[in-house]
Image 1 (cartoon, helix red, strand yellow):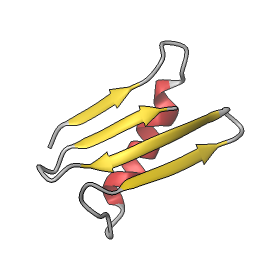
Image 2 (image 1 turned 180 degrees about the vertical axis):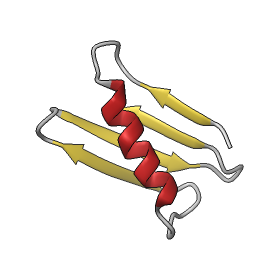
Image 3 (image 1 turned 45 degrees about the horizontal axis):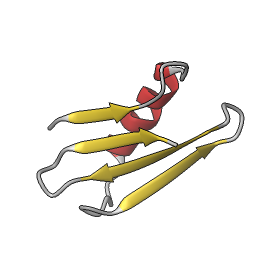
Length: 61
């Protein structure tokens, strides 16, 4: 499994890693489906996707 994180430099990476960790533990992930996590207290939205190869892409919007 590869984890790819795309984020601006000024983002708290620990918050993103926490969200990715919870996503990995999620049992009912759909391959190639998008999941969005909004964190209003941090002012960010994280888009997550599990590819058909089993890799995870996290993109901070």
